Length: 249
Ligand code: 13P
Image (cartoon, rainbow, N blue to C red):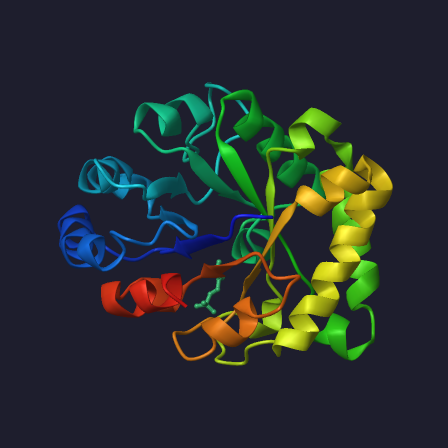
């Protein structure tokens, strides 16, 4: 059985004070929610506040990105040891907004994933096709490319520690959720590749999250799909009551 992961990606929202306020409301609502792992990924500047606010709970804290180097002249980057020192245990890697606006490539996604693993952070590696790619019938080709140029470069031990998030770009922040069936189909494509590259057992153990306009209203129908092992939630993770409802799908 794969334990579900329900992760919130706060993107560029909330201050440390707002982070504390969120946790005050959120903590009691998920105090009994041991059916899944809960991860919240705030901006870097809130990591310490989030770790402090989650202290004594099972809620894990993650970064939204990670540098490929340990330290050095990389203005604007934050490294694995810095994220660990803040008390976080996860990091998102290769989010489509990083790919779209900040020049992230398959190669840098792989380098960042390797850095996360090296420093003991659990990477949530994002993949997913853009609208025109889906319309051109190229979804599978895109997923295969992202898998083979990024994830396939890991060794078996490294692969066992990652979580993959399938986030169709056309569904992010648009209110256009992939239907549970569309999402499950993409998850099957990814899992097949994982089985082929890393073996049956490793592929079966891989957790694949769905992301893209997940809301309290659609969380349970997505989670009803055997192929969907959790969700990566953007906008709806900013509200403690709404995100708790998604956790408690
Ligand atoms: P929304 O839930 O706001 O569509 O964002 C999804 C996402 O990008 C999570 O990483």
